[in-house]
Amino acid sequence: MAPAIRPAGYFNAKARKLAAIACFVQEAGGLDMLRARADAPLRAELLGVHGVGAETADAILCYALDQPAFVADAYSRRVLGRVGVLPEEAGRSYERARAYLLPRLPRHPAWLGEFHALLVAVGKEWCRPANPRCALCPLCARCLWARKHAASDGRAG
Image (cartoon, rainbow, N blue to C red):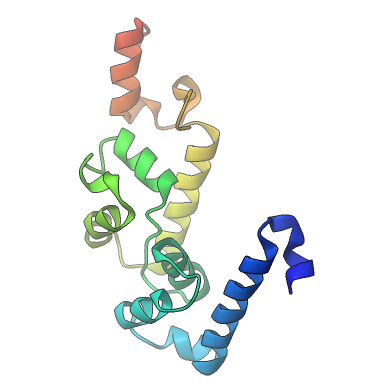
C-alpha cells in the first residue's frame, strides 16, 4: 500500500494506519454492519484504532458511515468562531467545539457533511488564518470578525 500513497508523504506510517482502519472495518463485518451501529459507541471504538484521532473518527462516521457526526476541524472552528456561532472558549479545542456544536446542529448526516464541506471551502478560499479575504467572503455581512477588523482598519464593514 505504501507505494500507492507515496505522494501523500509519510507514506509508511499512513499505510500502517490505513491497514489498521481496513482491518477494523473487515473485523466489524464491513461498512454496512458499521452503519447499522450507534454512533457514540462506534466513535469510541474508532478512537481505539491505530492512527485514528477525533477528527478522523468523526470524518469516518459522517462521510463513510452516514452517522450524525460533525467534523469540528480548524476550518470549522475558525469560520464559526469568526461569525460568532462558536464562542471563543468552545473553539479552543476540537473536543470542546464538537461538544458545543453537535447538540445545536441537525442530526442529519448528509446535512452535517455538506455543512462541514462548505465551512472548509469558506475557510480555504476566504476565511484564512492569516490575511483573510473578508471583502470577498459570502459571510462578510454577518461576520463579527470582519466588522471588527474593518472598523479597526478604517474600512467600511
